[in-house]
Image (cartoon, rainbow over the protein chains, first blue to last red):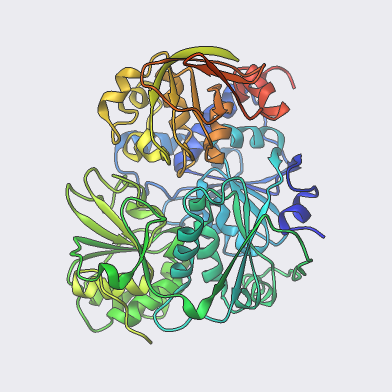
Length: 403
Length: 156
């Protein structure tokens, strides 16, 4: 009788284990330091155990020549070592891992805190720093403390203007910024089965904002069908009765549109409490909400209208962008006055492509609203795509209309 | 695994973005991280860190996995960070770069001398001694080696 983490890691909560890593990934930010540290370890060869990926997503295309030089060195190394390499424009590492790469039951480690995202496939997926990743390059494995698990029981289905992002902000608000520390979040119950993969990815993505090691869904028919469409044949995972260290319950029908107020992701309020707050920028994208379904939902709301405030849309991957072109979603967004960025992280981390000025306020679909993150003196509020879309049209925080 | 320093007191939920901002990450020059450490929290802090023991509130190092946060503190001369709890990626990063991180609830008096001994498992300040949550055997080995680079370079 085990949690999903215990099953995948093959030990009980609290035990320390060394585990072979199935897939290991870095981006242009953490990859540079990983490479430098791996060389310092005296490495002459890469472990042939894990599949190693290098995905350029954080500052793409490079914003200055220092960044370009660092990226050049990492690109040369990745290509010269025959690693899986995704250059600028390919997309966000977590999204690429979610397009038919990560499979149920795998141990996946990324050098980025949001590497918890592909836990949505029933994998044990978590983030580490550059030096831990360098050791994985060297040895093909790493150590874990098998986490306690928090059961998040979902019932019902989402209604009205509410999205998975609102559910994500709900659980972050309940658990707070450290309520999940050292734990895994398991999303279970009949409500979990109603959620498509994109929603599951959004929910797992925010798990680290509670301090959690990962967020996980059991692979079910939704997972199997999603991966089948990407050419992967997998089997569902059957949940066993298990003991959770803590349990939360959510009826999805009760979820309402929410906003996380600057500068804390756990300071969550109903959109209507903030209605009318004037905005300087709206940003739709990131590993939280930059998938095709997000862009399609945005287009449905802004099509044929004009945004009232500068609105930056960054697709999470080339695949997402291509789909948005194919279906006409991109034309609708451009027609509504949105600015489209190259696939990647966009301005989320405050490096380029939409950094805020002193005193400016941004409503963002990302996952972090820390002080000064998107620019010194700028304030970030976090919301769903529907809330961001309605707010882009009015220029102020606005409750989305019910479908 | 034994040391001392003057206390620098910080609040809870210190995220790695305020330890070192994203705009300073893209460089190999570690001195850049030292000169901008905590800039978005309090620019005066950078000058107080040499020989310091940071005594912070819960959830220190939350947010981004950027290892530059732990490196910046180490290079700035911080002897240890003490907090009731840490974000797990920062905790691993700190040990991996040889920066002692100590789980302990300690009320902080600015400038007071704080001593610690990780082998014996205590922190002392203001004439009292406090127990700390012990590191796992693996983490102790890594920290004793001076970090994960040395740990692996030691011919394993």
